Length: 91
Image (cartoon, rainbow, N blue to C red; front, side, top):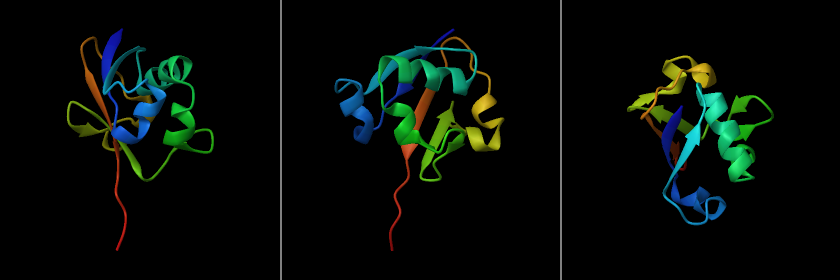
């Protein structure tokens, strides 16, 4: 199924400057795999290692953090909007 993925400014260099792209898959993991296929380098920027989402990156579906749902296995539905949000840290 196709969903819209909102791309934050730091990743737009990988999407040709696009702020929103379409991706297909039935879970967040599959969506990220599809993004990586069309925009190489996305996975490297989102993950720490092979399977762990970087702690400074949050992914939301319909305003809900996937960490509070099923993580990368969270199911997506046709027409969902996924937001990738880099978190700011500092002090």
